[in-house]
Length: 292
Image (cartoon, helix red, strand yellow):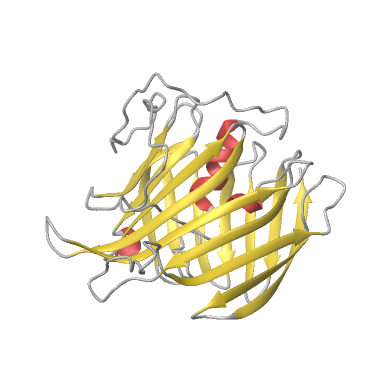
């Protein structure tokens, strides 16, 4: 899944303003209880979505938000909190969680990240070169934003009326001259779609897109993730989405992941991800899970 821009190198996706038909309603973020002062831009809208059902997943909104800030939605458990999970494919990913089910650290063959909920610090980097970021938490330890050592905002989050993470932006994170924006679309109590973009700022008025992507999530009758379909669109040399003569966006590649071998807790343990288009390949994934 290397088309995803990694925060924890597992998969972070974002939305572009060129994509239409998205619910862009936001609400005020929960109360900030951190000593830091990162701000987010949230607006209240009275047209709320249906309330998220925790009975179908037995997961709190805070746990779901933690997963979505760091990883892809298909790594969410169905009913029981995870202590550790390993994803073995073309590379090995190891993610650890605290007793509340929040992400605490992760390792991908030497690329490391850690969230310290006591000191409000985020540590990210390779073995010998790691950067520290100040985190702004709310009362339930949702990450509202992060700042680097210069006081620049490098990450910010937005939430809907139910406290669910709906947008996350990385700006020059890890000294990268790219801005990533991620929007999460919900359908009742499920994550339905993730829309993404990445661009390089040329100046204050000019942005050069380098990635535009949509990810659709399909569930079975047991509310388990059955399939994800990730579409990456073609861009011109000027960074614009290519539109064909049928007024459709041209596709660079499509990755379809099919999940199976559900365990006693209804979580998938095997997957096959097939990519077609300009880049074609097939990757088999094995997921090993330790529960709280």
